[in-house]
Amino acid sequence: MTNEGIKLPGYLKVSILLTGLAVLIAMLYIGRSIFVPVVFATILAIVLHPVVNFFVDKRVNRVIAIIITLTFTVLVILAFGALLLSQATRLSDSLPFLADKFTEMINQAIVWISGYFDINSQKLADWVLKTRSELVDTGTAAIGNTLVSIGNLLVLIFLIPVYVFMLLFYHSILIEFIHRLFSLGQQSKVSQLVSKTKKLIQQYLIGLIIEAGIMAVLNTTALLIMGIEYALLLGIIGALLNMIRVIGGIVAVAMPMIVALITKDSAWYPIYVLIVYSMIQFVDNNYILPKVVASKVKLNALFSLLAVFVGAAIWGIPGMFISIPMLAVVKLICDNVETLKPWGFLLGDTMPPLIRIKAVFKKQPKGTIL
Image (cartoon, rainbow, N blue to C red; front, side, top):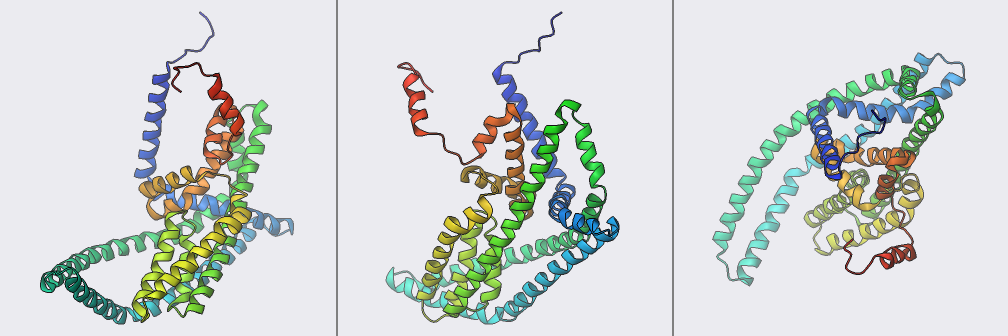
């Protein structure tokens, strides 16, 4: 018998790969209530680990250091949540006025459309009323789902700190476990990969927080200058939504445009909001993002967008937020494993030289289909 490995045909390798991928996605979807808090806790633990080490280096007991770090983090998050809640409460108090204003605008639109297109205004009003009733029914169901989501969120709020504490406390055991999965000859490479992964997540999330802070200031300042109501709430929500690439930016600009349309007498204000937000997005995409965030994670836009959609399909809104960091970790692993380097190149944003591409095409004989 020979020691040569069994060579599988290409179609069989692809079939095995797709089957494994389908099983993995199914497992992630079915176990989302378990995986989501663990992933969030792991990312947060990696970010907080240097802070814990700082206290430990100052001769503070490790358990005390973890408790101090977690307490400070929770207080910051609660303060931020309280700020958002106070602004959201102010908005909810104004909802009846906004609803009446919106109804008035709909009635004016019905009169204009019926006169311009020669449509029976009563039929149009009946259609709007029917659509509104359907939206109310849908909204009622959505509220029920939202309450369930809030309940799940409260569970996560209490569960994630417990996971973070355990991950920080058993950090050395987890690192040693990863090392023991590989042979002695691979220990150096494993250490480098673990170190790079931790550094990547730390730098990326810190950069993301800095970017969100800058965007919140720019959004809020612009809305305050234009005199848009609920500027602080809309500015912060817009900055948070901006973390979800492509899709978040669209929703972030739509919200203040709708508020401006309802609360302002002139229809030009939504256009002003669109123009100003477009300018802010331009600054973010060309100056803030490349310098603060993208320099840490070099992913191309295509797979970033696909990752957001896949994350939303599997884990909902939390999946949209953590899809990019997870994709960045996958790319880092691919870049450091020889057989996976082509996949790392595919996920990246480094364009091959145009001269090399032309040379490849010239070498192909006539009639060859690439």
